[in-house]
Image 1 (cartoon, rainbow, N blue to C red):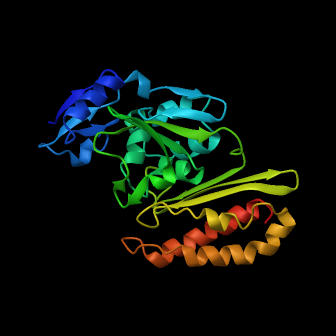
Image 2: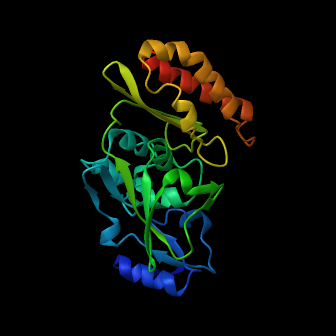
Amino acid sequence: MVNGYQAASLPAALAILGRDTTIVPYGGGTDLMIEADENATYLFLSKIPELKKISEDAGYIRLGAACTFTEILESELAPPLLKTAVSQIAAPAIRNLGTIGGNICNGSPKADSALIFVATDAKLRLVSHRGERVLPIAEFYLGRKQTALAADELLAEVLMKKDGLGNYYYKKVGAREALAISRVSFAAVLDVAGDKIAGCMTAFGAVSDVIIKRPELDAMLIGKTLAEARTAKAAYLAAYDQAIVPIEGRISAAYRKAVCMNLLRDFLASNGI
């Protein structure tokens, strides 16, 4: 049994949160099945139309934070990379309720959709009764279970770039092929225009306290032909080998490190590098 509000509009939700910042916002509420706090008051966001839209503008696909994973899968606008990752989240019953907003704001480095948004440099539109701001998702995560979301703010939309995401790579390594939490996950995009690499974006999930993204290392390949990238490959892998420092847990740090490097090598090889 939980206590809460069911907001019918975004202004109504922001007004409720503006009056009492101890209220806990929830998207699909799937985590309540395992960690509900009977002393907390929840603000349920799953019925707010403004948060359920998937649309596009000149530069971005705009995904409402309360869109469920199933709605992402059924959308004609959602990029294939995002659909690939979402299709491997839990079971259909969870995908019918779980939302991308909840997956992001949970702050877990194992969040499967958050990995895709970090890898592709998505932006987050955060709103409150005071106004709104747009924040690069890389600046949203401050540490394990810590985010830049203010107590009176809600995540309203995720903005993904429309172009340059077609050539992607995604792997999720778990204890079994289905219904598993990630032990290591990896997403990458290589955008080749003409004979040169126009963009390279990579990210590793479930490895450290936050999703690992090192754009300064990926920049080592940008602007190069594939032949030049093959020459730079050893230095690129060596730099990542230094940059990835996994945490020790139920899964050993050595295992995580080895899997990360193998996935990175496979991504490069699959693109002729």
